[in-house]
Image 1 (cartoon, rainbow, N blue to C red):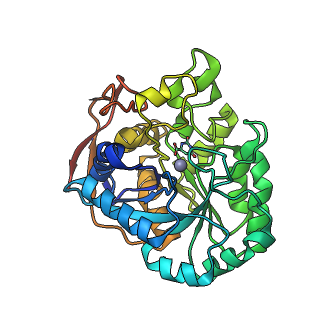
Image 2: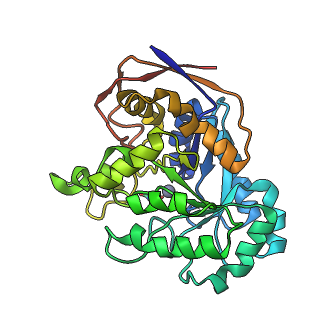
Length: 335
Ligand code: DOR
Ligand code: ZN
């Protein structure tokens, strides 16, 4: 059995820089036609010149594959209309991180008060630039995303023309917000469709499944699966594939991030097949994103085949999700 996906897109991807970039960029570029690239480098990408230089390094690292990196700037409330109109041709969104909430987010926003953000949000609306948000409060770890729901509602109500993408949603409450506000959209990762907190910490601690936002309860995973499997028109696949070297994962003070880029499409096919929803995978991994972002991707056909693939133990010292396990779908060819 085979399945052809047209121009699959990864709408939330960490490619890092330098040696790590060279390891991971070709893995995404092999099977995806494009992806939204996160700006949380050290230092974060906050200028057009840094963004253009980073995009060039990504393209060099990708090798011969056809893949379009869709760049984002790290949100600052100091961005004004003049700056954003210069940035607009180079970007597909601004990524807002609450200060200190996750990896390399120290320079993020500490005050979610809409008056402090109004000028930047209004410029984004005028220029049609989406706002991508890491939605977590600084509360108790299992409640952070739910608490941030109030911020999403405040943003959505006060700026109904701002396109807001709730990144890597993990709760049933976030899923419910999609139908409540026209201007809220979401990305969903592979790992949050598969795991709950039990898989991370219910038995022996699993550092390679530790990420932000942390995986939640079974009922949250069910709500995510429900909208992903029927390719709800406001959800898109965004892997949040976040590689860290093994030394930063298997240690005291494990870094947050699950590395899924090399297995993402294959395992999505497995999940959608198990639920008899394979016909919705194309919308989840490409068509919805094209419509939401008004984006026309490079033409690329990825042919998946139902034949076993043994997930490598590591890619140059970066351990993927499901390392050492057999998955039932593999990539047959890309044309
Ligand atoms: O688990 C995560 N890892 N969540 C994030 O928000 C950031 C990411 C990273 O950059 O490592
Ligand atoms: Zn991320």
